[in-house]
Image (tube, rainbow, N blue to C red; front, side):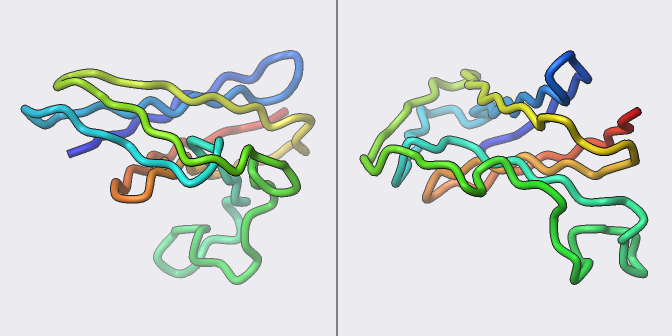
Length: 123
């Protein structure tokens, strides 16, 4: 099983994001990727929340996505996490508008779902 945690920090360039995934299993886990992208990050405006309070369910979609408009190497890749081992994938949301956002970090590995969220207040 893969667990995930998302750390955020407002820096000079914008909001720095770090998705850390950890192997909680007793055996090594191999993460398989279709491209050079290891994680994706998306930001949703909190006021756009649906009745359940989750802005990801809004029809407006994310206001920013880390992978959008970026080119990633088109080569298969793998990373193996030992039991208890972890890996951290980083991104920066440059120059976001002031507001409150739900940021979602998602591992892009083929066979392992891992996602973490954090609320970010900008400005």
